[in-house]
Each structure stands twice: as structure tokens, then as C-alpha cells.
Length: 275
Image 1 (cartoon, one colour):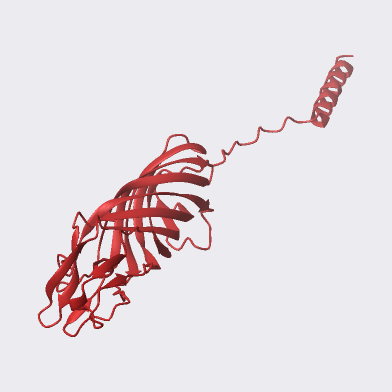
Image 2 (image 1 turned 120 degrees about the horizontal axis):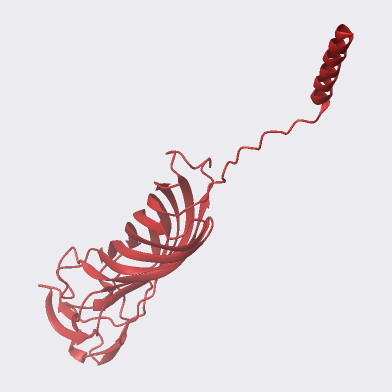
């Protein structure tokens, strides 16, 4: 009897174990891997290229010429046609951005750039034939602008990997100018002023083909700037000179002289720092 009871108990236990083995098992919870949120915070450096368009304004462009300075021996009016100075612009930039909330949010930053500018000096024909020994020229057409740079603040809003921003700050530039005609200061006429503008920038994936330097991001931007470089209040300029010694025979008032131009450019930046 005892043996029968023991055998029954063992058999019941084995049956229970087998039944438990057939029950569904609870799977382990999945491991949560957070998706990285892009941020514009970090240092960056890059290159840019574009085109610059003359946006300057001039004072009067017609001036009377006394008879003794004309080949015809009669008074005439010298009229100078404004020649726009347009040309290629290219250079490099470096800066830092800080984004208050990763993903989408306000972004502030600072950027400095240095640019080559192909604005050549131009002499403009007056339409009047000067008497022998004299030359007539427009004093506003005698200087070039060879380079410029800016140091600007940036303020924008990021929509994840797209940044829309405005920018503004200090600008400087210099170019050659003629020492012997027009009363300019020298061959490296340094000027200062300001620049304002805006743009849009997009961050490519980290594994982008352009990411040669293993940066945390590669960004592409399109930007427009208005640059105003003040040449000062030099109201007097040479108008007629004696060609024998470059002495100024007559000068004219040309008003305030600024270099004003707009730049449209595309840029490529490598961002380093916070991912």
C-alpha cells in the first residue's frame, strides 16, 4: 500500500512538471535604445563661394568743364556713367553655435570669415576730350576692393536638422587705390563698416559622403549678406589734373563715399563637438 501511494505521488509530480513545461514563457523586456537628438551646439569651420553685386550709390555724375580744359575750347559737361562692380567672392569661415533645446529650438552663435573679392579699379570716360596737357576723370572710379571679412552674431531657429537664421555685425575690407590721382590715402585703403543678412543651413547625416574629417555633422548653407564699408567723408576729389606732374587743377565735391555690395554664397561646414 505504501509503495502504491509513493508511486502515485511521484507520477503526479512528474505530470505537473510536464504541464508546467508546456505553459507559455514570459519574454524578457526589450532593451530601450534612445534615438540620438541632433543639436547645432558646437564649433564649426568651412569654406564658401559666391558672387558679389555692387549696391553702391553715387552723388552727381555730371560736372561742368571750363573751356580752357577742353580740346574744343568751349565749356562742356563731363558725364560719367556708373559702372557696377560685380565679381567672384570666396573664402572660409569659423564659428560656434549654441542650441538651447536639442531637436528644435533657438540657436545663437558667432561667426568670423575672410573673403577674396574680385572688384577691380575702373577709370571712367567723361565723354569730353581734354585739352593737351590735361586729363579728366571721375574720382569715384579709381579704387578696387580686393578682400573683405566680417565678425557677426547669428540668431536663428532650428527645425531639427534645418536652421533658419539672421546675422549681423562688424565688416572690414581693403583694396588698391591710386596714390597719384584722386586724393586717396594710399595703396592699401583699409575700410570698416557693417554687414547684415540671413540664410538657411541643413545638416547632413554623420555618415555623409562629404564627411572626410569624421566630424559630428556636415552642413550645407545658402546665405545672403549686405556689406557697407565706409570710406569716410572725403568730399573733395581730383577732377582735372595736369598730366605733366599729376597736380590737381580742379577738384569737385563727390559726397560721402561708401563701398556697398551684396553677396550671395553657398557654404560647406564641418561641425565638431556635441552630437
